[in-house]
Image 1 (tube, helix red, strand yellow):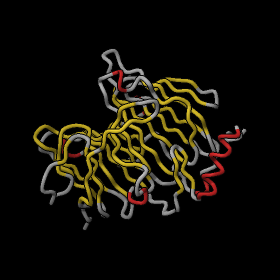
Image 2 (tube, rainbow, N blue to C red):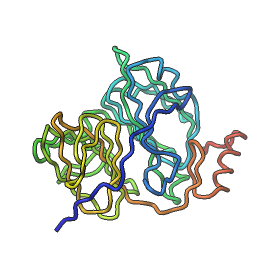
Image 3 (cartoon, rainbow, N blue to C red):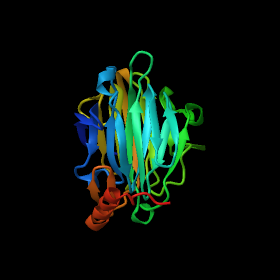
Image 4 (cartoon, rainbow, N blue to C red):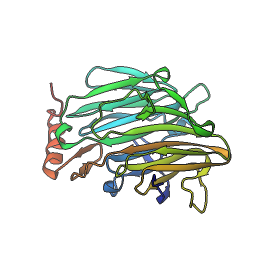
Length: 284
């Protein structure tokens, strides 16, 4: 019989500022990364106030990680040291593998009404891939499959598999799953998970109970960490529920982390920043 995951912990994302002063909410990041392994950081930058995000994220380096940007509203102009330029628009996903090193910038523009709604997730790279060549996977809304689950659930598959339907991002060592799930009011969805994988949900609309024994509903901007098990069972509240669901295989490797660079040892971390200062950070 499948074991339903219970709630291990919940936390409300915390207002903070990043980049040149962008207002956002951070659900986790920079503290106790072993608890969210292989995920490192999750930022929610939903705002309808342009002054809160127009300063953007000017040129900065990354090494040793993947960053996944998922937009709901607005646009983000981006450029990088590889010569890439483009715009991440509403419904788009940008999956960037920083690998051995990239320098880039992200400048939010908002939509016609000044709304900027999106999320960025950082995924750790295993030691053997931290110095791999950087690359992008640009994914449009039409490339993200949408499946109808039980009880009328609508599930967008950014990464992972539901039945025979596979998301557009494959071949990632940590075997991540990244889903955008919407449940009608007062309905329940069960979804299988791999035992021993880290699993978490982040509420972006409505509210719901994230295990059968949950005493209360979790609402907007709350992160739910699940205990181990074979599936989740989520019940939407009276206003329905929308949440992002993420699972991944823990790396269980040492982490040396400072700002936008994540390595395995302090020596590797110091080398990365020395190379950045000396102008030898980028690999040809």
